[in-house]
Length: 291
Image 1 (tube, rainbow, N blue to C red):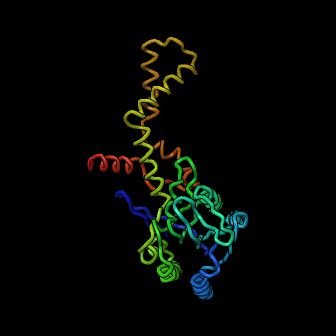
Image 2: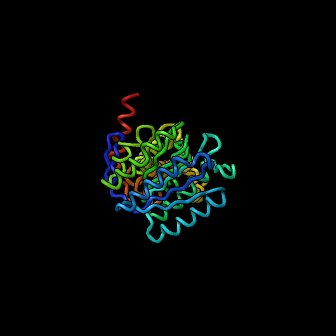
């Protein structure tokens, strides 16, 4: 189960999860906490918890191979909580410690997006690495969301915190099947989460503000009028023709439910949007009132 609340909107949906996939790429001298957590997770698994699949990744080729394998398994029913145990920086992205290679956030996003598409938007990601939240700066409204739920720290995070709270997080999931409640009670103390419905909601708000209002809307309108005249072979339009074309363009640029219906199938990978245009409109009006 997933519960999400933002901008006055509360969302509750079912999330399919059946496996914990743990990818680690740490120096050997830092593997102690990871091994202890994995041993405890194996204990949970034996006590009717989710099975645990461990991958040690040393370089870029191995990382890509792991995601290819996971994507194939997801097409056959794998629905994982993907846990990435490594180091990261804002500028250089994910560090694959054994080889010293860096994988930029944009590349990582593409890898997890492919996996999320294969899970039909049922992927939970826990990026237990410093600055992992910067990964989500690569998200685009016109592309599929990289994960149903994404959790990561906004800055540095201590190994002690992760060792203490990670097992508690998975124990809560096993006991309650409520991912967000488990996160809030454990990892949420030093990490943040993004829910795909909330991300889609906020992306639409930005799109409306940037392209459907003010100067940008006027510029788009004039470009579309020019394009329609050219498409119809009209070189010297009459006033009546211009009025009609501008009216048609204004209607097409007016944000509404059709905009949600247009973007949702690709962005949410087949899931329905859990909100309507009325919810967006209320959020827009609240933000305008608060300015």
